[in-house]
Image 1 (cartoon, each protein chain N blue to C red):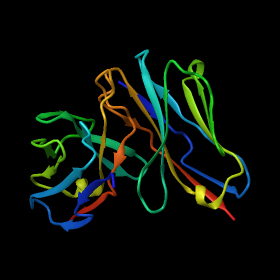
Image 2: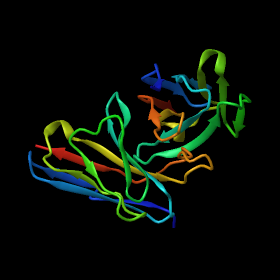
Image 3: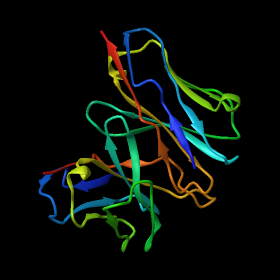
Length: 117
Length: 114
């Protein structure tokens, strides 16, 4: 079954304790991306990756890191989480279009709800 | 820079009514893509439609239809004869230029009452 898998789905942590949210897709998609969803703000892009070893900042990258060492995995790293990073996080993937951009037909993971105390 | 505005934060209708969700976008690029996604109460995000900037034909898929008007920079979504299962948050999104980033609107919460 084609899917994007995120872990953990729920996490409560404390300020400053490093954490990683994993994301894995089994569709051989080149493009992967992380979003956070906050009430009234919709989904905002944190980081994206066009392929292995190619990552770039989205609209709200501060406080986050990513890596893309393998095509299927795109972990999101919070080195020193703060309460303003309490949010619902989504990982997504898609194919690249013939023109090199993402097709927009994103496949999303089920979301990871993070609470930072 | 690109921007998507969904001015309707919440809409409530009674089952079988028609409802239109508005989406206004901003981009300086002449080539761009517009999307609608649905997020039901279970939380997952479901792709509904993609439309490119060169295709202004309206599209219909069952009870769903989309009206793309470049003149007003709008890409509105209409649900005909709404059903309770249509209750969800609906997001409009835009990808332009190199299509590296997908920008979402803030979403419209649609509640269909029985």
